[in-house]
Image (cartoon, rainbow, N blue to C red):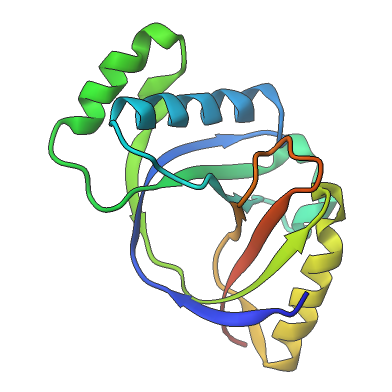
Length: 170
């Protein structure tokens, strides 16, 4: 588990924003909506990604999980043609998924520290501590929400997750 620096330019994604614990009803509903709209667009999107943040003065892992905020993302190959997302929403409406929550968003993170975490999500704090030490050694501080890229299904017994933190000089 060796952190490294990487730079990320603009990425266009399907996006659903919400609040609540990972795996909770709000979170699961948002994932279903993203995949329903992506399927209606006719192409693979992904992997699933999450930007996690809290609106609290405490460090994120000290805040109750039901207060965590997130943007769930499915990266796209580029900006979809006009009307495609709207048609996909209409086509997926009968699925019962909350498709009206799905939006297109483009964001740029710039310089990031990232590491591959292999293992339970409950053990991510270990990888995050390694990332924090790496940042401190280089005089870097967070510059945006914590970012996770889920390389395996969320129910995989040995998940593989890229943990990414946008940074800037202290």
